[in-house]
Length: 512
Picture 1 (cartoon, rainbow, N blue to C red):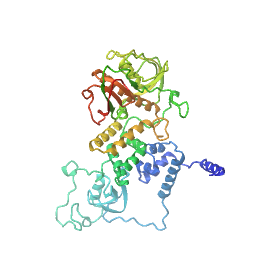
Picture 2: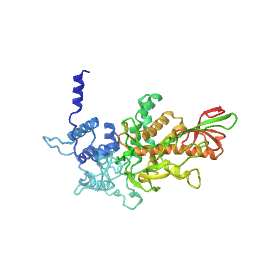
Picture 3: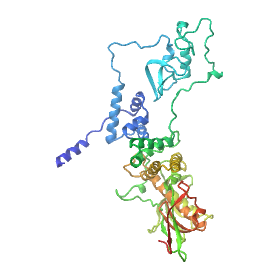
Picture 4: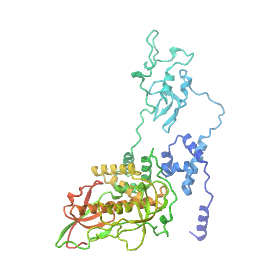
C-alpha cells in the first residue's frame, strides 16, 4: 500500500457514522418483524444483552453500528406496506365467526406466532384459526376457541359442523348437540396457549447444543470442534450469563464509574490493586528422603465465582471498619506473618513496605486468620475503602450451569465439552477488565476479586493439609499444592470441582 492509499483508507474510516432510529423505534421494528432478541443478536454477532442495551439507548459504534443500521433500514423497508392497485377481499370462510378472526385484546403475539394467509383448522378445537404457533394452526386463547365454536349470528346451523363431528359431516336433525365444555367441569381443561412447543433450553442445554453444532459443522472432528468452541467462548459465556440472569433483581452488565486505583497507569502497565498470589516453597524439609505429591486443584476459577461481589458503583469510605454486608477494595497495612517456615503468607510474596490496596477476599482471609479461632496473626489495619452493597450469589446460577456441564462431561469422558466449559469460565474472568475481547462487561474490580478468591481458596487448602498433619511443601497460583503424607485422607481424589488430581509424584531430600 502506498502512502496515499494508506491516507485514503484512513480518511474512509473517518466518515460519518450510520444513523440509527430512536431506541423505541428500534424495539418497534424488531417486534413488528416478530424477531426475537436472540435472532437479531446472532445475526449481528453480539449477545442478546448487548442488543438489549442498544434498544435501551446505548449507541454502538464502528462496524457493529453499520450492521445494526443496515438491519433496521431493511426492516423498515419490508414493514412499510406498498399501496395495492386493487384491494382484494380477505378470504374468510363463511363459517368463520367475526369476533374470532382477531386475537383477544389481552393476547400477546410472540416470536413463535405467525399469521396464516388462509385460516386452517385449530389443533385444539378444529375450527378455522388465523394464526399458527410453533408451526401448528391454533387460536391464541381459550376464549378464541369458545367464540369459534359458537355459531355466527344469522348463520345456518346446518352449515357449521359440530365439534367432534367427522370431517365433511353435519349433525343429523334431532341428534343431540355436541356440548361445549363448561368452565369448572373436567371437560373444561383450558388448552395450553403454546401447544406442541419445545421447552426453552436450560443453561446446561445451551452448552450441549453449542457442542453438538460444532461437532456437526466439523463432521465429528473433536480437535476442530474444540478449537472453534474455544474461539467463541467469551460471547458464549456472556450469552449463558444472560440466560442465567433472567428474572434476576440486579443488573450484571453495567459500567459504573470506577475509582482511579482501578485504572492502568500505562497501556501495558497495571493498576494499584495487589492480588495475593501464592508463590511459596518451604525453606527446608525434615531429614531423610520424602515422596512429594503435587496436587492439581480442579476448577479453581469456577469455584471462585462464588465470592462477595459489589453490586453497584464503589463508594469511598474512611474510618477503618469493615462492613461484611459490603465488598470492594481496601487500603491496608498488613500484619506480620511469622509462619513462613510451614505456611505461605496469605498476601503472597510482596517486598514493598507500607500500605497497599487489596480486594475483599484477601481482607476477609486476613480477618479470619486474626480471629481467636485461628490466632495466626494480628488484624490488618484498614485505612480506607471503596465498597458497595454485595452478594455472594450474584453469579451462582451461572457457576452452577458451568459446574453441571463440566460434571456431565467428566462422567461421559467428553473432552470437547470439558475444554469448552474451561475456556468459558477462565476467559470470562480474564476479560472483565480492560479487554478488547469482552466489551459487554467492564468490571476490573470483579476480576481482581474473583482471582483473589481463587488464591484464598488455595491458601485454605494448604492450611487444611497442615492441620491434618501433612507437610506443605509448595503452593503456587490458584491450583497447585505440593504435600508430604497421606493426602487422600484429607482431599477426595477425582476430576470433580470439589476433588483434586495428582499432577506429579517425586522424591526429594529438600524442597525444589
